[in-house]
Image (cartoon, rainbow, N blue to C red):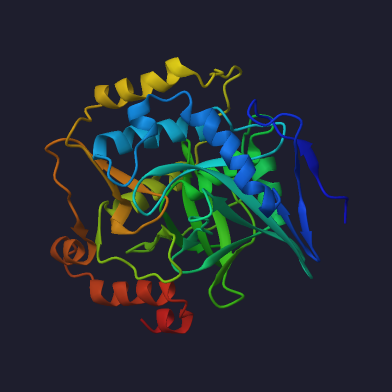
Length: 358
């Protein structure tokens, strides 16, 4: 095993300080758990010092509009301005259970297993909120092969491959489809799709084996209704009956990309670089207002499940929740939707035998 990492921390609020790797037998954690409060304090000072006071003070009592402004500000700070850092810290914007979006430090946990190293990720926003984001009730474990193939097969700017991976995988509610000999999580990426084959080797855990682009996917048969997976914070999970979005539409878009097999859009040669300053902090409110948000806007968890995904309602816009089963039964003619939904539920519950019977 190589010596522990130690890299200079890049922040004006904590100079001459190094971020180190924590070792626990066959497990390594980066950054070190004991460093997380100090690192986050410096990053929060950098972030909040450039925001208008009204936005910087938003808490659980804040209105929807200011929570939306804070959400966009943290996304800009984490995903645009800090995508690549010399200290290899990765930041992620994360709404807490009160829908107050926080800057989080991604802690990468690497464990040596007989088949090779695997990775998990936790998101530190403070001592009272340090989740390991789950998917449909399971923990997520990534083979080292996933990160290697993502870096190799997906266009990335230098030093941004891990940040890009986190945004790509955790940035959408995902569907799963038959892919090759098993199943894979399918996520949109630019004008294309990516497939992440997975299996359930351990109860309560999705083991993700690799990353495939359209060039490597040789089989992606249609499946209705699609298996929809939600990211969430709680250890327990119940698939929602009502959703904010139409899942079959996501399947249609995915299948169109699969059948067209368009080449993945290349990265542009130049990339705009922004500096987090007072001017940019002030602009965030205007951006949201110009997009139609105002005093009566609302920020809600997607599908009413506390997790990293949200939906935003503008003033006067009603919350629409779709009963997917009822819609399919009313519009689907003679198709046996009850049997199809029973098969899907069996797959989501990890019961392949029941799925085949359905």
